[in-house]
Image (cartoon, rainbow, N blue to C red; front, top):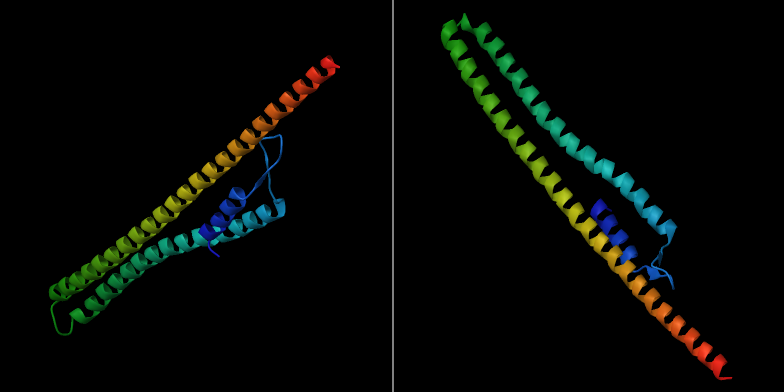
Length: 169
């Protein structure tokens, strides 16, 4: 289960929480909440690790391109004495190395862009969920406060009625 689904379950628990009479508190099952939080703690590091892996992958592509360009330059220099002049060979190797570097930079940019989009989507979803949870908690507290206020009004009117009954007797 991914972290967004876990956050959704947490939101459901908060939305379904029962109000405690005469208070602005709600009754929650701590074991369910702690279980979900534990699952979330376990899941988030793997998603962060996945993003880090994508960044390392991008760096590996650049490093491999650099090594490949060096290898091509060395190979071109070794062949320079046989068929072509050293200048022609170096130029060809340089062109190949530049092409490899261009491709590697393009791939690295795409991976980086993908990681940034993924991270932005994840953070946006997390932000939206947190806003919804905050709203759900606020509504729950307001409902509990309303119930508490109504019960206080009823209690005071019952007490006043009892005082009037006692005075009449």
